[in-house]
Length: 100
Image (cartoon, rainbow, N blue to C red):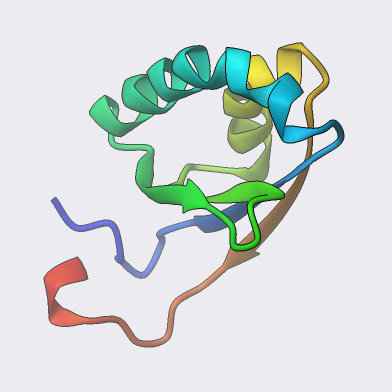
C-alpha cells in the first residue's frame, strides 16, 4: 500500500501534555490501544514520545483534517483532557523509497 500518492493527505499530530507525566501514565495502555486501532486501519504510520517526554508525535494519513480531529476524539488522552493537539498537514515532495 502506498501512502505517498499525489492526493495523499499526511499529518503530523503533536501532543503536548497539559498535566504531569504521573497523571498521564495511568492512561498509557488505553492510549496504546487507541494507536493500535488506527495502525490496523492504516491511518497511523509512526508514533512515539517526544524528547524531552512532554508529549508525543503521530504521523498519520487521512482524507481530511476533519477526519484527524475525529480520530483524536477517540484518544483517551483527549477524552481525559491530558494533552493539547497540534495538527500540521503537509504534502511530501520527496520521500524514501520504502515509503512509496
